[in-house]
Image (cartoon, rainbow, N blue to C red; front, side, top):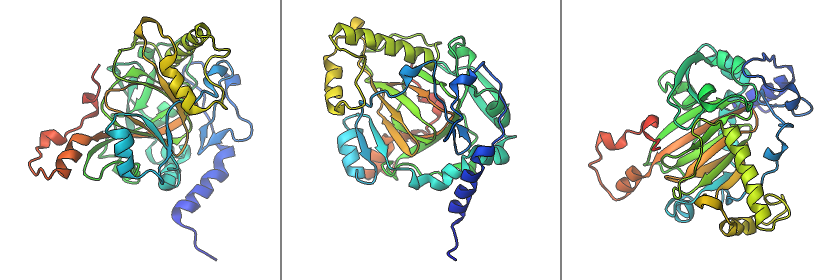
Length: 349
């Protein structure tokens, strides 16, 4: 009998246990009817979600380029996206992080790290307020579906502020997208979010964000013009407001429906974005749902908001391309300060 690899064996065990996962409800009043427990109701132990109260969040068009990571060479990526400062969704990354994904199974994370302290941020633009809780407490009491009666500065969210020393065995198993330069300075940021949670509009340096488990919807827009928004609104509140505003703009432009259908040519939709009239010089946002085994490249200085459609696990790689360019130019005088890339310093609001 052929010996199965440890990763494959673990993955098989993970899938076998999905249907028997214990769940503890808590947190902010998630509607039970919003959760789809039928069929494929979970993914690696994390609950899939169907927002029946907000159906407009599903089936959104993808107006970003999508490229198979195995077909897009690093050189082509740099030429088409990184240097022109353009976003793209990279697909086909699932097998690259199969072992890491198995380690992110809900049971596996709670068994290994459930009692570890994690730093939660408020889910608003500035994310200044921090709270320390155990991963188990967060998973069991702060991950019910986000509702509209809570503000971002009242909602706790786990993304970043990781203890890389304590969590080294976990981070070491993650493989960043192959388009991250080997000579670049990279800061990894790991997180888990409940359904309809996320971070509203913010801006920082460039990088990649890979969805390990679940689905995450992204909105991105160039740095200028600066969008108008409430920094204390939740990502859900902002997203629903944006969709409503887009529907109004589409109606004014003579569209029969808000947004494009799933069958519409993505290139036509991208071209139409620039032609749709927008009030108050509002920026034209690109959007796309990034699924398991996919990563979005967010360019330097682009505004973006994220909304988890499921209980989602994700890893971001913030990239210091300046160091990579100096290394390729043969500059051997890199100073330590040039290499320091603290996540708190990435936000330039």
